[in-house]
Length: 404
Image (cartoon, rainbow, N blue to C red; front, side, top):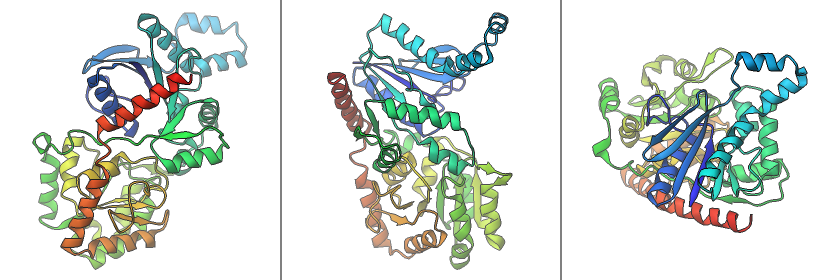
């Protein structure tokens, strides 16, 4: 099968192999496995350059997401109305995507295109080529919790969802939320996301950052948060309870790994440290880490905090559970992966007291209870190998093509 993936993020064209967000990580895993299964794979990425590379034998086409501001363009636009100029600029990205797809289709017939929902890459799909849109997030909730407002971006995404015939996503919660919110009539297929195949290969791990952590905390136990440290991921709730549990469990640390989000000049990670008061030195911070450096930190943690306000299908949660970690997530957002008290804990969304209660339940587990729960966490991920997920995707693609 000849498959094209259109996305707003994939690998970094400068430092090849460095992946960024959850969408980039998902596509990196999927495209490499699809190629291994014998499919022809091309990735079209919105970027600030026009460039084509081959990475692991996969063709990656970076296209500019804004028009060239050439002298010819500026002169030509002088003869157009302001409204027309604005429309051309707005439609540029979808025209660039379409042009690239048509060019690739003329070289080698494309069987299907998978568009990423973020930045509405599938708003204007090619009518003659079967396609689907994967829900990677919902802009309405993203803007709410990041404290930003971009009505045009939200409008484009909603238009994309409403006009898409074949829509799928990894999260039942987000799919149901979007379907109800936008009053969609079409069913949304659920296909979960895989864990990284190399996650358990400790020979490829880099223990540099973990050793640095051990120098600071010795043999003390620590609870980990990794990812974007901000309101969306429950940073305020962590700040709301960190003092009480660090005071009660003085031999315990909180480790934060990731980029701290600043909203209204308030840095979330700094606020968490401030909230810990005299135990601020028990809040250890590290910047974002590559996976090979992150895995040892996850593996040796006592548990993982993920009190997200809204979550699609958390790659981070899957990774932690695959490494036999107990995750504290939020109800609805993580209920697809976590059964409270069986393979992890679920707290109320936006509730610091509920989060504190779950942390206490974690810290009170006997060694036998903890080991049993960790094994159940691992077992939940057994169906999430990249091979299994890609086979489900191929079945779905064939369904789309058949019904196109």
